[in-house]
Length: 330
Image (tube, rainbow, N blue to C red; front, side, top):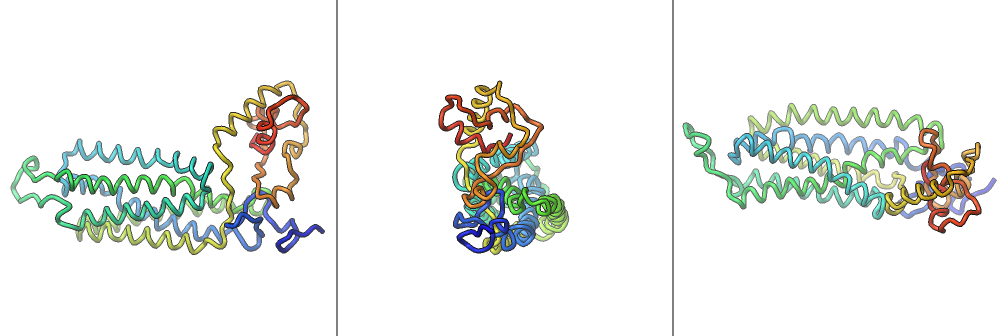
């Protein structure tokens, strides 16, 4: 039986190209699976409490404390919410092309926490919010927030946007990376992971939209925003504690470039017959993928045109097409 330079036979290593933090092949018995995912689910529970603890009652703070009109506050929240959902496109690209999911997540979570701390500070210091509106005074006559006060508050919100842009798209996909698709048992556990993943999100949302909103409305915004900030700090700590157990997939360069390479090769080989054995569509053996930290992506029959680009022929293709597409998703 062939044995790796590390320890254990090759079949004890993952076959999907995942590696450890040093870029070495990983033993499936010591990494990934629920041993790693329990930390990720724990992170998501507390992070969702933090995020929805801020966003759920945000319109109340803008109208009651910053004295913005309903239209202005709704517009500001819509712009902020849209940015929160668009920024993950950039975060996912950076992770896949350059930094990897783990490093992108760690950097982004630090930015996220910095934004939460600044936001808590802005609702706590009297100098960073306008005076309370006196009783009997019409809303339009209430003192408005100064440019500095609004600037600090919205700066904090958009720092949070940058943070969630790097954390939101990478934490769930990193969870999926902890299960080897080429091992039937691990592949089945991946579905269970996502069930618990969304359950933790629901628990976090329920807690924030009830308990935290109550605190903000009845006790104070300092505590109402301080608790989510502490929760986020704790969630990051939970994530970092799981570092020794995580499996990683190495960044593969720009996904757009690789997609174009596959389609160019597919068009140039459109008359080529696709082999019945899908293993022939991969450039390396299972063991070589495991040893080299390469991602061996499973074949699918739902999108068959690019399969022709995966077939190795003697045609005069550019070197980049034959070296890149042979292990791409069909």
